[in-house]
Image (cartoon, rainbow, N blue to C red; front, side):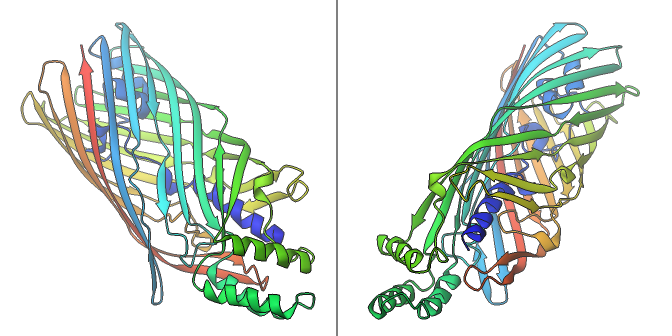
Length: 461
C-alpha cells in the first residue's frame, strides 16, 4: 500500500509538467491576434520565437518588444450526476525581445519567454483528488539569436535556448471514498482495542466527504539547453515561405521535495497508530524525508509557414506546426535510498505526435492602426485510455482578434484577445484503490475553455 501511495503522487506531479494543456501560445501580442502565426512573416525582434531567420530582415537598428497575457481558464468534469469545476487563478505568461541590426545582412538579439506555464485547481475534496488537487507551473527560456541574410530574398537564423522551470502540485494520498472504506477495515484489526476502534471509526465518519491527507510536491529543474533554427525565402514580392525547427528540451529535476498535510492532528495520530498495529500495512510514506530525481522532455516543434500580401494593406499568413509529443513515452522516477529504499517508478505515457493548423490576417487601416484576426486548431496528444485530470487535454479551437496603435513615431501599443474552446473529450484513467488494492477506472467527460487578454509594447528606431 505504501508503494501505491507514492507511485500515484509522483506520477501526478510529472504528468502535469509536460502536458499539451500547458504549451503557451501567447508569445507575441501582435501574433496572438492573428492566431499566433508567424513562421513565414518578417516580425522584427519577435521573429526570434517564430522563425529566427526573420530577424535578418530588421528594418531598424534597434527593435524592442515586450508583453504580458492574462489567462483565465476553466475545466469541467462530469460523470452521471456528478459535476466538478476548476477554480483556476489567472496565469500571466510574458515575453521580452530585443533585436539589433549589426550589419545590413547580419542581425542578433536575445529573447526571454515563458513557453510553458499555467494553473489548475480542482479543489481539495473533489472525487478525483487522489489524482490531482491543484498545480502551478512556471517556465523561463532565454534565447540568444543570430540571423544572416544570404541574399536579398534568402536568410537563415539560429537561436540557443536555456530553460529552467518550477512546479508546485498537491494531490490526495487517499480519497474521501477510500477513507470511508478504511472504517470497515479498522473494525477487523485484531491488535487494536475496541475503544480505539470506535474512536477511529467515529473520526472517519465525522470527516465524511473530506480528504484526510494530501501531499504537496515542489521541484525546480536544472538549466537545460536546446536550439531553434530557421530559413526564410521571398518567393516574390507578395509571397514569403518560412521553415523553423525548435529542438526538444530535456528537463531534469535532481532534488524534488514534498510535504505531507493532514486534515487534523488527530488524523495524523490515527494513521500513526494504525501503522503500528498493522505492521506498516496502513501507513502514509514519509515523503518529506527524502528527495527524488527524474528526466522528462519538452517536445520538438517543426513549423512550415507562408505569408501572402495581396495589397500593401493586407497580410495573410498560414502556419502548419508539427509537435513531437511522442518524445514523452514514459515517466521514470528514482527516489533517494531513505525513501522506499531507492524505489524506482516506470510509468508509460505513450503520447502521440500532433498537428496545429493556424491562419491569420492583418489589415492596415491607417499609418497608425492595424487590425488583426486569426483562428487555429490544436490536436491533443493524450490518448483516451490514459486521460488524467491533471492534464485534461482535448482538441481545441482558438479564435482571436487584435490591433496595434502607433501613438508616437517609434512607439507601438498592441492589444489582443484570444478565446480557446475545448471540443470536449471522454476519457478514463486506471488506478488502484488504496484500501481494496483493486484496479479502478476514473473517467467521465471533460470540457474546457480559456480567455486570454494580452497587452504589448514595441519600440523601434
